[in-house]
Each structure stands twice: as C-alpha cells, then as structure tokens.
Image (cartoon, rainbow, N blue to C red; front, side, top):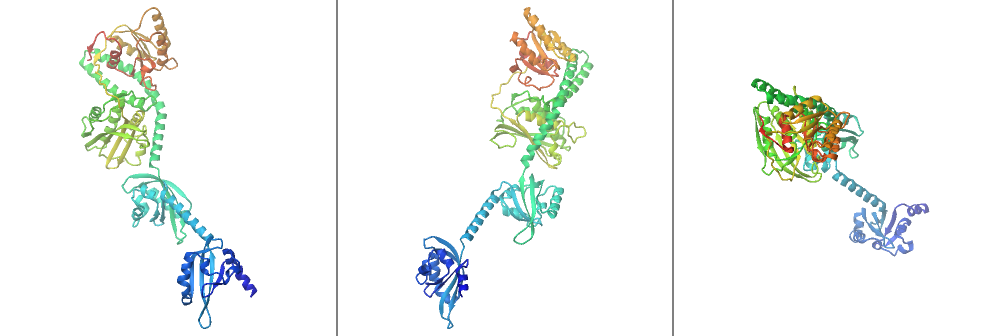
Length: 631
C-alpha cells in the first residue's frame, strides 16, 4: 500500500479526488507542488473552483453535477491558478466513483501540466507562420508537384513568373496536363528534367526556357529534388524557379560588347590602313572625273567612284564597331531623316513603307551617316525577310525613363524608333547571335550589318532590342538619347572652293599626300608636302621667323613611329594661334576627330574624301577668293 501511495505521490502527472460538493479529499504531491500549497491547506478546505480560472469554474458549475450520469470527462483543457496567483495550462480527465448501490461517492481526476507543450506548439506555429511568410513572399518561384507533373502547391511568385493571376489558376493549369507539356519550350530539356526526376533524389539544377500563359518565352533557372512526403509516404517534387531572362540578356549584351571590342582592334587597324590607300585612289579618280572632257570616260569614272563609295561604306562599317568608331554627332531632326533613309533603302523593291512619326518628336545628337546606316541595315533586313512583298511599319515615340526602368538605359529622355516587318521572323536558336560580327545566315552576307548597328547605337548612348516570332515577323526597337537643344538650320555649302597661298600637308602615305596636293592645287593653292610632322613644324618655324605666313596646315592624326597631328598642333599654337590647322584620319579612334576645336584644330575631315568634301571644309574655315558651282 505504501508503495502504491508513493507511486501516486511522485507520478509526473497530478492526481486528485473531489467529494460531491467539489471539495478536495485527496491530492498527490506532484499537483500540490504545482499549485504551491501544503496538503493541510487543501484537503477538506479548498474546492476545485478555488484553484482554477473562470473557465474551470464554468466547467465545474455546468458539468460536475452531471458527472455521475455521464461517467467521465475527457481531455478538458483550461488553466489552474497557483497559490501565488500565477496560472498554468492543464488537460484534465475525470471519472465518477460510485458505491455498490450506484450512488455517486466522489470523482477522481488526472491532470497534465502542458506548459512546455504549449510553448512547443506556439514555437511550431510561429515557425510555420515564419516559413509560410517566406514561402509567400519569396523573390523566386517555389513549387511542389507530384511525379505525374501536377502542381500540388506553389507560391505567388511562381504564378507571377509563369504569367498567372493566382496560385489557384496555376495549379488548375496542370489539372489535366503535365507541367512539362504546359510550360517547357525545349523538348530536350523537358526530357532531361523527366529523366533526372525519375533517377535522383539529390538537388539538381539547369536552365530552361518556359512559355508563360501569355505566350512570352522566358529563361528560368530551375533547382529541384524528389522527396518522400511525410503525410502519405509518396514521392513528389519540390523546387525553385528564378526568372533570369533580363540577366541572360545583360550577359549576352556584355559578351557581344566584348567580342566587338576584340574584333574592333583588328578591324580598326585594317580599316585605317585601307582608308589611307583608298584616300589617294579616291582623290585621283575624283580629280580625273572633274577634268575629263570625254563623256564615256566620265561615265566610267562615275561608275568607278560609285563602286569606291561602296568600298568606303564597307570600311565605314568596320570602323564603326572598331575602337575608332566614335560618332561625329550633330543635333538632328529625325522625321524627314528617317523617312528619306528608309525610302531610299527600299528604292526599286516590292516593299512599301508606312510611317507613324509624331510632329513633336524630339531631336537627337546623332552622326547622320552612322544612324542612317542603322536604319538602312534594319530596313534592308526587313525587306529580305519578306521576299513576296509586303509593308514595313516605322514608328517613333518620345519616351522618358526613370531610374532602373530599363535594363540597359539610364534615366533620361529617349526617342524609340521601331521598325516592324511581317516576314519570316528569326529562329530562337539564332536570336542570341544576330549581333555577332561576321555571323550571317545569308549566302552573300558578310555579317557586319547588325553588328555595326549594335555598335553604332551603343556609342550613341542608346540600345537596340529585338522582338521576333518565327513566321510572324520581327520588330527592331532603336533607343536614342533625346536632346532639348534648339535646332539651328545651317545653309548647305554647295560651291567649289578657290583660294591662294601655301598649305602644308603631312601624311606618311605618299599616295595620300600627292592626291590631296593635286586637289588643293586644283583649287589655286601652292602645296608643301611632308611625311613627318617634325619636318613640317621646322618648315613652319623657319618661315614664321622670316615673316612668311602659311594659309593653312593639314596634319594626319597618326604617323606610325613618329609625332602625330595632335602633338604637332600643340607646337604650332605656341607660335601662331590664328593659322588654320586641319586634322585628317583614316579612322576615329580619338576624340580629336569628334571635337577638333578642343585640341586647337580648326576642323577635321575623314579619309577617304572627295574634292567636294574638302571644298566644304575649306569654304567654312578659309577666306574664299572665288566661287564657282560644283559640277
């Protein structure tokens, strides 16, 4: 008996017994310790209602009197009150004890202190709420699906990435279909995913293209694994998807820029040397045409110059994406420029051009030759994409971008020129390479067109984007920084220059020196030719000290192994601030060509050039003694 009493008193749960009136007739040591009372303070003196909260009192008043009839009370949860007034949660189970005649004698109850259990449950609830909050607000898509490819659960970001308005709608989308059939674009990746799902329970990851609800294709990085569900023991899939479309576009843009930069070093050097040689040939042919009396000879020379112009255009494309492709920018109104350029590119074709260009279109600081080249290339590509004819839509729009509103462009005002065709479109496997130099799918193409466009727009501080769907056509969007400057219309100079005096020419290529000499002599000048800048400076100093003045000087920007034009003009300006000094170059790898005045040059001219182009520069900067119309 003593052993049994000791067992009851030291049990990890509380035991007590109440008489008919609810007064304690027994309480074990465990429960007494919980309540903070001695046995003498409780037995025969305290009622059950004295040591419980209001909820426990309601239980007693409503249920204890019926305990003899119902026989037991199970898992009732409420709080007890200690002697010091503090409370603790318990679970109570009670049974009625009756005598042999069936009369109620007392009740016997077992109570469990669930303080620690409630703390654990609360921690679990908080943890579940915490992780549910992470799940609901995660910046990546999270999903849970069956092995059969049916979504079981997903977070809002998963629905957003795939273009659905709600998680419920996303889950419903795979109710009768497999998730890989609904969203996967590339069959080989779909098959790879399925194979890995069936053969691995480790985390796997790979990139894939997904089709959103609206049909737009995105690139996503998928990480997933299979696991055994604790509730039913079935294998399922859990994973994450991150939309990396913009990141991939940025990476592609960086790779393209790096390829252009490395090829530019080679292309720039080749084009520079080629233009030096071309400059002499160009000049001689132009001079021969201007003095020829034979109509047939003139016809041949005109045809030769036309061919040479095509060669010059090709070297210009090389220069544009080379290191030396800095644009020679000028504030330009775009409406007539866009129309004239596009219509000229389509001359004689079976393609029409429709324009939507608002009258309030902002002007832009552009190199007209380079931007004209961009429009020309894109329009010709559109024409070739529609061999059976059709129409090209060209629209333009003023756009103001805020901070981080565009993936590649900074905050500011832009003009977006959009050129849309309804042609064959661009295959998805080719799209990432369309701006690569020397990459082409055309039998007679050289692969410089779109690479040049990309480089031109990039150097103008804009960007070029493409939307395309095979069989439905393409849209090229060209963004150019807009200007708030006022336009000033300058009258065109259309007269051949005539002058007198002596002009010094410096160029390391003899062909170029003599060609320019002939051009200047045909305009009335005496010419002193030098292949070295130091010799030209010494000649200038000697004549200056003797009181003689040169009419002008023309320096080549770069002289291999010697002093270039930029260094030479600095020496000249120490003696004479007024003498006109011009700079010429076969490429634009220096800001001197773009802003000659900042380096004490009077003006710049790019090789190769015609007599008319040389005349235009001289007309603007030298006193004209006699004019006659150009032939």
